[in-house]
Length: 192
Image 1 (cartoon, helix red, strand yellow):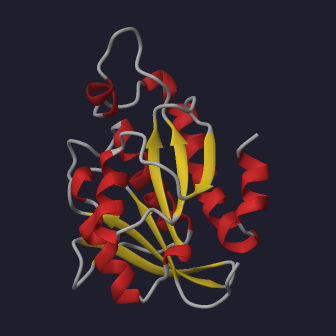
Image 2 (cartoon, one colour):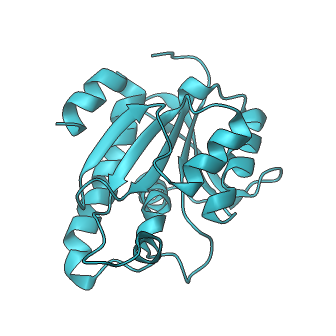
């Protein structure tokens, strides 16, 4: 893992209070938790449609970011931030919701397909590749015949509060581990 340059950690979601607690916003929720844990605050970026916080994690310079665009337009803000902070693809981490993983489980990978995720599609399109880290935050499958698009835009149930808190906390830990110790060690911790 490179010790040079900043890391860009992006939590995907949709803007505004209507979406703040939805399953689709779990990536943004993890960014909020990281900002809180570091006693920092997010501020509007001057050149990208995003709120950002510049901080340090384990000695590394890190930019925490939440795009202010809708999920399917995440690529523009991510590309603008990567360019502004001169962050290479191998030091970009995208936190996003994942239907195919049980609630509160985490999987970490480098690159890969978009699996129908519009935020990932947008970033891949804007960046011209998909060679960045993904921390996939499990939100579970929709019950019965519920449309997945409807499911991801619903708030977590009150009965899921404990799992969501664990997911937020472990999402923060996964970011720190990935930055400090690299992909293999992080996968060994979370992908089993």
